[in-house]
Image 1 (cartoon, rainbow, N blue to C red):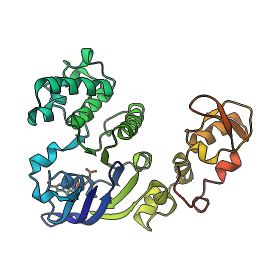
Image 2 (image 1 turned 90 degrees about the vertical axis):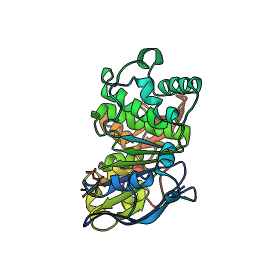
Image 3 (image 1 turned 180 degrees about the vertical axis):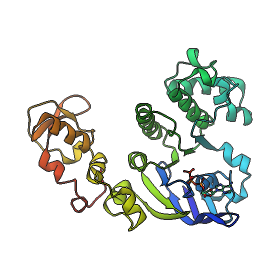
Image 4 (image 1 turned 135 degrees about the horizontal axis):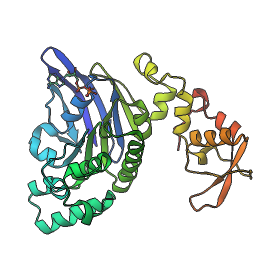
Length: 318
Ligand SMILES: Nc1ncnc2c1ncn2[C@@H]1O[C@H](COP(=O)(O)OP(=O)(O)OP(=O)(O)O)[C@@H](O)[C@H]1O
């Protein structure tokens, strides 16, 4: 658990982070979102003490980070940044091995870990381990950046606009991969983005910042259905609000017993995707199948519409 308590950071006369308190539960993805200059990156860097707070404290699993040397702290916390930050003249393998080398792991253990991470990120070690970063695509470099951040098996991974430099298709894949990776490893992720869509997709909880202040800290559903008045309301108040809400809810939640004609939708697809399929097919209902491809029930337009409004949605979606 990470506890940020009344943290402020001043740069000259400017208050970049203004009395922020929030608690980040273990094994969740917390997204810090806000416009440029809102203090997200500063707050993120205060967690691994790349920046010291002017006042306030950060506790990680009950330990005050001020009592730990910055270097020791950063060896235990993964950090991935936009544009990956790889060393250009080091091979992929050496880049990934950076922190384990610093920690003095023996060479055989490092080699095993590099191999394991390359495979985890879908990069065949025999093809990629000895390549230089510029010989990889942007998406591959980004994956190596995250692999490097995870090399020493940190319990916490900080990510600053990690997908900012990727084109939309690769970006969507990288976001999916992060969700799968986080579930698989059970790590705590804190991610900075200026993209509310990304925050809604990835966040277990979202911290909305503006002018250094934390305006709202809540689940994606709460942010969409009960935004804090003012900035947050304006940020998510576009015409696609109901579609964003539907994208957070799985088909399984609105499924009904029974059959329907047409191309099936998966029960773990979002209601937004199901709505799109229904509109495209010009139908009132479509069949739903499980991960095993077997029929589970059906999804209907009225059932989806019943969950698309702010007042029809009292509890957090599955
Ligand atoms: N080292 C520094 N020296 C002086 N001012 C700084 C420094 N770092 C950040 N700031 C200022 O603090 C404010 C918050 O910056 P920060 O980088 O945390 O914002 P951000 O929300 O991450 O923005 P962006 O999305 O543009 O990176 C900005 O106004 C910035 O100019």
